[in-house]
Structures are given as C-alpha cells and as structure tokens.
Length: 485
Image (tube, rainbow, N blue to C red):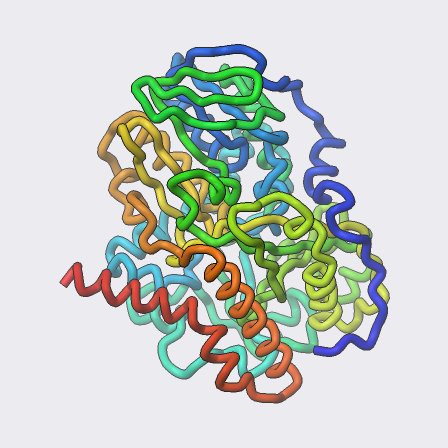
C-alpha cells in the first residue's frame, strides 16, 4: 500500500495518549503521593494498570477489612491501560488456538468468561457511576480482499459453528457491513455481539476512584526497586517499603526486566492515532453506531469512533524493543509505526483523505508465545504474577483480577481452576535472538500484507518467517493435546 497523500500527523511520544489527556481533564482524581515511609499491609499490589486495579477492587469487595497497598511507578492508567484501542473483546476469533492449547471444554469455558465480562463491565460501570464511554454495539471483523480469508480449512467461525456456537461470529452481507461503516474495501464481514468499546483511561481512573473509596492505599510515582520473596514479603521502593503477607505483580511489559520474567514474553510496540473531531464525516460514511472494527490482514487494523466524534485507529505494523526496556523512545516515538496506522484509516475509508490527526502515541505489549496471559505463584508461595496479556488486556484483566484475588485468598474455585492459571506455557527465546526473530516476523507480516494488497504474492520467505510464531504456537498446542490424551 503506497502512500499517495500527505499525512497531517503529530510526532508520537510528545504527550500522553488522547485517552489519558481527556480522562485527566474530565477528572484528575484525588492525589496519591509517592510512598515515603515503611508500611505494613495484608496485600501489596505492584502495578496500577487494569490487572492491578481490578485485583484491588475485587479483593476490597470480597474482604472490606483487608489492608491493601498499590504501588504504581507512573500514575494509574499511565502504562498500557491508558494507551490501547479500548476494545473489550470476548476473543471468540481465537477459539481454535485456545481450544487446541486447553481442550474444547476448558478453552470454550475460558472464552465464555471473557464474553461474559463484556456485559459485566457495563454493569460495573453503571453501578459505580463511571462514565467510560461504554458501548456494547459489538465488534465487526471485516475482510478487505480475498487473500484475507487466510488458508483454506476451518477458520474460527466454522470451528465455533461445528460446536453449536455459530452465533458467536455471525456472518454479514457486504451490504449489512457497509451500512454500519461504508468502507468500499469491504468484501466480507462477521459480527461478534459479545464485544464493546470503552474509553480505557476513563475506565482505569474509575477503577482507581473506586479502589480509593474502598480504602485501598495507592501510591503513584513510586518505582519498585525489588521484592524480597520471604514470609512476609518486602516490596522495596526508592523512598520506602511495604511489608506484606502477600504480593501481586501486575506490571505488564515492565516485568520483562525483572529476574524470573526475562523470558516470559517479548515486548512489542503498537501505535494508535486519533483524528480531529469529524462528526459530519462520520455521518457521511454512515458510521453512526459505536461498533468497533478490525480487518483481516496479518497485522490487523483496529479502529473505533469516540464519544466526541473522532476515529481512533491502531495496528498495521509493530515495533520491537530489545530486552526489557518497556519505556523509552523505541516505545513512544516510532513515527513510522504511527504513520502506518494513520495510512490504514485512509486505505479503509478513502472518503476521509485529508483528515487531520491530532494525537499519536505508542505503547508496549507483553506478548507471550501462547498469545495468552499466565497467572503463576512464585516462591515461597505468597507472591503472584498476572502477566502476558498480549494486547487483549481489557477483558482478560477483569477476569484476571478475579483469578489473582482467589489466589491471594488461597481458595480453589472457578477462577483458580482456569487453564491460564500456572506458569508460562512456553518461554520466549533469549536475547538477542528474541529481538532479531521478532523484528524479522514483523517485517515479514507487514511487507507481506503490503504485497498482497498490491495483488502480489507474499512470497515463500515472508510466509516462512511471518508465520513462524503461529507455527510455534501450533507445536505447543500439539504437545498439550498429547499430554491430555
């Protein structure tokens, strides 16, 4: 896809995400100064993103008297939780791979819990008076060329239909799809009703408010320097420490530099861009609902409208960082990746050529080999980690908060029996091999998409390199199936 137009796009990394700027302007929230003393607690949560906040809120609901401390190196929502696309997804599109890893019964049960969370988060927002721009209008998967149908055989829709779950990914005609958003590129579409969009930073800040109201002590701009895994554990920060019976680690990509997690996942980078308010042009293309959209390329585009009449779009390419550096210019300032996202909007909707983009930012993703999170208990048995959300953290972290709360409470229940509870399913390669492999896969997928958009074959080399991560996942699933047999 060659560019034939000029982009009016700010440099990414110059400011916080549009989501966080908007959320803080609407409600900066009560102050949470840095930790500057030594404290005692029942539970110390490290990380103030979705996973940590949902865990704090869930524990405070179950045990109101529990002494909970949460430490965040930036502000709550300042990491990936305030930088994503805002898709609350049930992940039915990933049913074949999830069931291959865990078996049909366990895999479909986990996916249904993710689907249930799409409704449950709306109920939670209403109950706690959090205006997070929640819209449960569904998510539409589109194909913009025949090649995006993928290889012949059973896709996720066929897989689900064969198990009596065909309604999870409803087929749509081209006319029905274009009535939702009139992209002339659409050649096929399906609707996932168990899907919603939110303003993610408003959700994160709403969770923060509820946690504070329930007595959770939150310390922002507090960098944790180490965790003494002992009984009780000690979480050490620059100007204080927390002595806690139990510790929960929910630092996302930032855990990649911590001992014990250096091969848990790769850190890749995605960028999101947001247009100026264009309500009239949204009317022109018929996108008057709040349906989120994703296309079928290998490095997909995902896009959605906002409550103030903008379009946010991400994807189409990716960046890679070496080792555990989840901060820095490689994560936040990659203009080339941001430009691909902006170009994607004009590719999908040529009618919007000339639109101005007002915000652009990057964020790290903790990408596991299985494409799924993990929740493991660390020695000596009172430290728990919930990591590896692989770019689908909104729904997974709500479920994850319940998993981590049950692990803290030491109960055996529906949450601790889920198949994602346990160590990483597979380790990623060590550095620098991991960096080289991820960059090569990103190049192969991106350039292959461009070639096929131009009507050219991807080429054998691009296929071999680009599809290697999926093939590794298939081998992991085959081994898992062998153990279940």
